[in-house]
Amino acid sequence: MPGTAVGGAVVAVATLLLVVGGARFDAWTEEGGGLLGSRDTKAGSLFHLKAGDCFAPAGRLFSPEGAEHDRMTDTSVEIVPCDRPHPAQVFGTFRLKGDHAISDPAAIYAQAFVGCVPLLHDFAPDTWTLPDVGFSSYYPESVSGTGGDRTVRCWLGAEAGLPEGSLRQDPGAWDADQRAYLKAMRPSSEAWFSASVKVDTDLAEATAWAERMAEGGAESAKLLRAIDGLPARTRGPVTALANRLDALSGIHRSASRAPTRAEFEKRWDIDGDEDASGEEWEARLALGLPVEDEEEGGGEQQG
Image 1 (cartoon, rainbow, N blue to C red):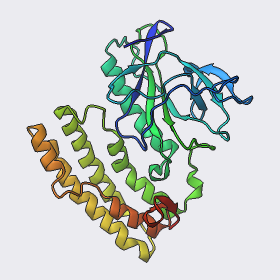
Image 2: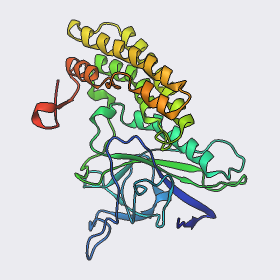
Image 3: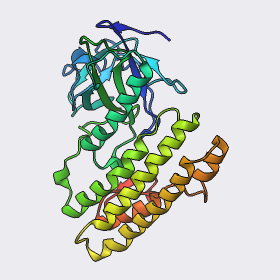
Image 4: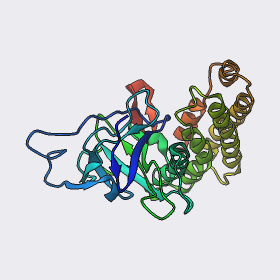
């Protein structure tokens, strides 16, 4: 694969398997203008981006379908005001751990992957309501022990229906019960987003993810039951969701111990209903959080 050396290190872009939506980018160009043809944009590079920045890439933002690790051939971007249509937004940055040299791209990728997940939930605690966007990161493929760029940049990007506002969510927009619910659901959601690109092909990756799903689901169920003072109308749906998460936790725990891929698939989908989306929909509706309106063809409705 082609690569570009920037500051002495080859830089990679990785697309995470579990995305809020699915997207892949070609160049965002307009004839006679910049990447978005706007006077409000500012030329820069991926190295200039910080949390909250909205931007347009010079080339592909996500890896081609089927590619595990693709290399960025152009790190140029235009930084775009978030109130204008924009392909992507940085939701967090962090530095790779340790002061030692790291030459294994897979080890760096693993750090980048794990580190981005909690930052996404800090930036947008209610991932349910994010638009059709992909979840990706940009990181140095190797780092020296004497310095160099160790920063991982995590972003959300959209191919169609470009956002015209920041995707950052304000916890002040939720009441106390809604905040408690979203906090309780975070372990389960973080576990879901922690699946690597290898879970579909690598048994060890799949079983490790299943174990995280089991732990995250059980923790969320525990936290849901511990919420004090919920209105009476919400207790039944929230308890039903906790019960479902506990049941799924057992399924995922069993899958995490599967000796073969075929057995993993069999254990993971025991009854053909391997998620808690129905119970979550009901709990969110009772709490007054937005849910997808199935009767209206996928639009949102406020509970």
